[in-house]
Length: 248
Length: 248
Image (cartoon, rainbow over all chains, first blue to last red; front, top):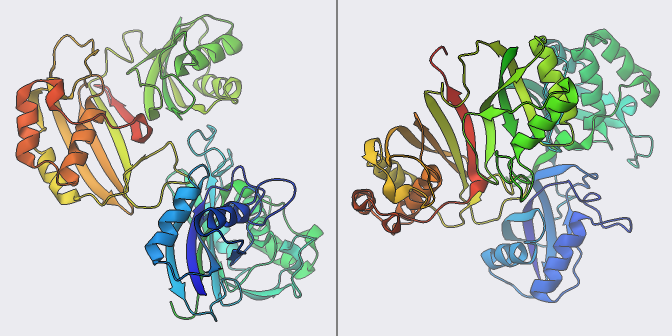
């Protein structure tokens, strides 16, 4: 048996999310079907994180076990060939030890959130950004974001159906920068609660609009109550960009 | 009567090109229908250049005459409202003198061509780049591109159905740069022949593959014969980025 670690890129539009589900096509199903078409095996593909419907990935990591010790480039190219009808690509495939697990070995995750902050609606980037027409105060958002950095109970920014054992997480970074007409949120942590990034971005939008101050964001965090947090940003602007492992 | 100059952004996928045509939806028709819905007028919208089917615009310029002297922001926002079903946006609308003509007043046009140069296929950028899996030699392409700069008979890079009076044009710039996994061609001239950018990019790809040298490109230019030029690059990677006028 050979275990392969894959880096995956996909367009979240048109998928019900990473996970195989009954109500539509998951990215996992597309990759598993390609594995079957290529190697004739019904293998489970395990990802580092289950992205939601409409959420994109530039650097999702997944692993799969195959019976045969295929060349790495063959795995990458064959899977891409069998996925060519779908907006899913294997960027790299590497043979790894059997103690590597895409989800349980991961020590960090990074997400990018893109807001298109201009009055005209998006065209080429439709479905790939959150369109916010009113001008946002980026320095105010960047200042307020410092409230969220560190070790906290993030219940106020956690989906009510989140299945994590604890709402306590350590947010390592939340950098907000203006990039042309866009505002980019670069967010890093060992792991995240369900909807945590989208709920933080939705709350920071309120800061950018002047509806909330940094103190209001602090009060929301301290409340440990989802009802005290801001709204959930749409999936369109969210990208899983990187998953880190101890060796890299 | 009031003349408005508009800067337009659009996703070329799903359109038969700028021009109103019988065989499908043109961007011009979308804008003209929005003008009708907003102002109740059957006005013709004149663009600086007629982009082909599948070609995108980040900075197309067009003008329209309206009976009423509307506020500029009203024109922009009302047209965007009436085009919200389509991937077309008015970025700016400015009142201009009646001697301004989007096409005839233009003194420069700039295009961007994007090649995605990596082995895995595109996902989020499908339809927005030309996917070239084999590694291209960017310095060799940049060196060869110098052959094309300046005042030349560009018959070898001109579509056979091109309606321009003369095949002689002055190419002001053709800058080729590696941007991550992409290769960007920034091309500027007063005006271009039909398919000129796509035919130049298709020929430069041959240089990047080592199939042609700069001398071969020179010979192709000198031949003044379309059959001597390289293949036409697909519309997917082409963007009209800027149109220049004397005052700006």
